[in-house]
Image 1 (cartoon, rainbow, N blue to C red):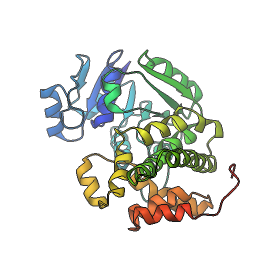
Image 2: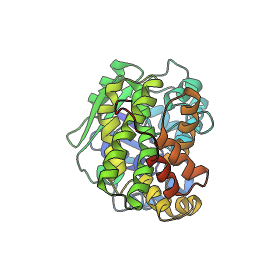
Image 3: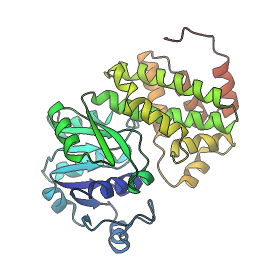
Image 4: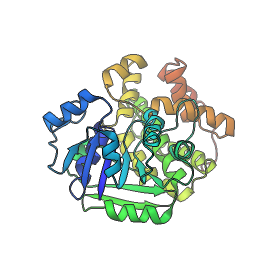
Length: 329
């Protein structure tokens, strides 16, 4: 199969490297200078240094030509770039099947990626999400990784999972597209919260409680968005949550650790040098949770720290002061 990966950040590059073991892959970056650097260096020194490109991985120069050759399009931009990429595809008059690897809700609209695709390419577009516990560095190194592929058509999901699956990159088909998207989006908020918790030295008991109650928030929100409860017990739910909250390669966890250390959000984002999707997602999920009357205290606490200048320690104290509840609620 011939793949076109759009977005040459760390994750897009890692996916291009992994899939080129079995498929012909073109990797496309929006900026000409980035394409030139990728082509001449044969590695992504900016976002994923130390991982040489396989021979089968090409750096596409002309987007239209690469799109015309592609049998499958994989969009690996941050979610802020998804709509623009879809419009670029529409301008070329081509509609190849597509997957996206971005996680979050669109800033301003609070809609999920599949809803953006429906608005830009139509509800009939064959599409799906690739999501699950995965760090770019480990995938590019060939370490075992397992993720979920959910699509708007179950046959398409199964076909793509089978075609893209390998021994080191295991892909499981799923029919719950909104549930998989919500799991991938909201776990980033919980990773920021866990970073704050660990940064304040609250201990492993508190971390375990936070992860557990965080999963309950994800499931409540996901079901309200049309997801299935069982999805949040799988790779795109608890699997992604555990990795992102506890792994120090997690950008969102790093944001939380830095907030606990007293750094400002602009400082943190400048030092990070990568997109941390949980920052914008926290605002959108908090607003939507209010609108839908969904109880999400951890999400609201993270939103207060990020966007309303509430000190991290004060937000934690408010959480700890909440009245006890029945665990299932």
